[in-house]
Length: 242
Image 1 (cartoon, helix red, strand yellow):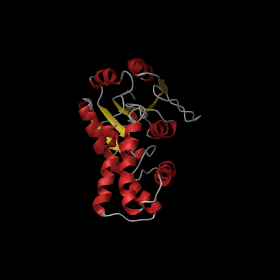
Image 2 (tube, one colour):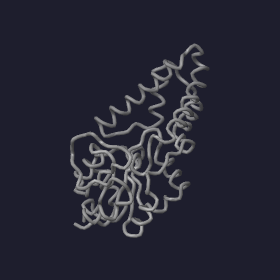
Image 3 (cartoon, helix red, strand yellow):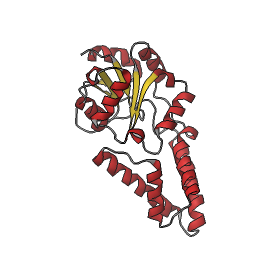
Image 4 (cartoon, helix red, strand yellow):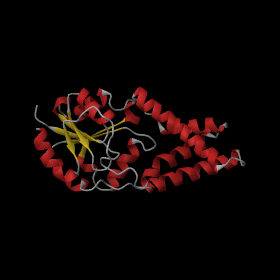
């Protein structure tokens, strides 16, 4: 079938994840340190870091093995559990807010050429985002896209914290297709990970475009239909895929 709509991954496809990351990490760690000092004044930064890594490991296991991404509230609760104390509900909620909204204070850069490519594509296809989320939920990603002037290009958003499932679950692609008014087989999906983006698109019988403009995925399979190495090549890549 011809391509009638496009879906795009967020991390390392629309934005460069490493940019702004240090600011996001610092803000989150400072919030943890403030809370921990009230409960365990003797706790070292290394202990806090280990608890944080335990939460990240919990996320990775669920994401990779269960096609589900824990919400920020659940991950922060893992940190308190690992440190061995309970916090007040208000303190927990504030910590979750700081973790989630870190994306707005440590805003990542767009991938090179992204804005021009979106403007070109939005004039030809309905566009959607399919993104697995960790600490930055869909509501905050929408705020970032709005603040950066590109949210209006998208008609459909599928975020794993809102749906309860993550790529490569075929339901992510089916839901995006429904929101764009097309069949899944009429989608072309652009993303940077073979395991989630390419595999999910193939399961949905959608076109699979591997984006390598930010990072190179070393997984040997599955293979995409085409590779997009930079956003300025999008018209040519779609022409080849079509």
